[in-house]
Image (cartoon, rainbow, N blue to C red):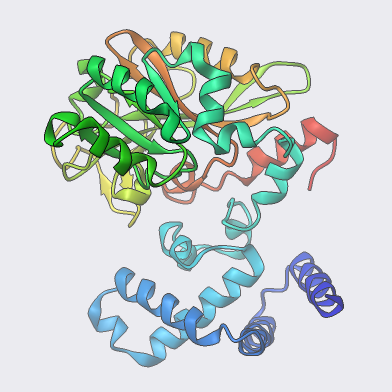
Length: 373
C-alpha cells in the first residue's frame, strides 16, 4: 500500500511537470515498462496493444518491427502522461498532435476525477441499475416497462407479454448495449420457458418496443437511433448542454452504440442540426449513412426545442447527479427517455478531428467548486 502511494505521487508529479522532451520520453517509457514487469502485466498489455496497433495501421507498416516498437513506446508514453486507452491514441489522431494538443482531450483515465466531483456517488446507483432508473424517471418513458427481480414476477410477465408479444430485454446493470435482446414470445414453446430463460440472468427490465418516427428511423431502420445529450446542472440550477450526438446502428445491428458497431454524428446543441460527419469506433468518416445512403451532415433533428425542455426536466429529478448523458428517442409520440448515464463517454464528442473537450469538464469543475483542476 505504501509503495502504491509513492508510485501514485511520483506519477502525478511527472505528469504535472509536463515533461515531453525526447530525453523525458525515454526515461518515462522505460520506467513504465519496468513497473509493468514488476506487476506482471507487461506481456498482456503488450499483446493487447499490438493487436490494436495491427488493426489501425496498414500491413506494410505493421511488418516494420522498428516502426511498431517506436509506435508502441509512443503509446505507452501517451498512456502514462495523458491517460489514454490504446484505441484512443488512434481515434484521436494522437500521432499528429503536439503535447499542447494532446492535453486538451478527455481520456479514459482523466475523466473520473470530474465524475466523482460533480456527481454524488450516493445517488449514481439510480443510473447504474435500470430497475432503479425506471423507478425515478417513470413519467418520461412514454412506454410500458416491467422490472423483474425473481420468479414471483411471472404473473406480471404473462400480463405484459399478452400486450406486447415482441419486446426488448435489458439486464439491469447493462451498459453500452451489451446483453440487450429483442424477444418474440411466439418463438417459444411456452411463456414459462421464455421467463425462465430471462430471469436466469438476474434483475432486468423488459420494455415495450419503441416505435420511432420516420424522421429518425429512416437513417437506419433496424436500430433505435438515439440522441445522447450530455448536460450539466449548474450551481444556479440552470441546465446547459455540453455536447450531443446522434447514435445510429450500422450493418443491420439493432443497437446504436459505437462500441457495438454503430456510428455517431455531432449535433449542434442550439439548432439540432448535425454538423459533423458520422464516425465509427475505428475513426472512419461517413458523410452518408453507409447502409441507407442518407446524408448526415446538415440533417435536422425534429422537435429540437421539445428535446431541450425534456433534458431540463430530467436534470432536476436527481439534482445531486449534475453531469449526465441522457439517451432520448424520437417516436411517434414525440421524445421519450431511454436511459441516463452518470459517467457519459466522451469519445463521440472528440472523435471529429482534433476536437478535445477537456475544457468543458474544467469549466464545470470551476462552476462547482470555483476551482480549475
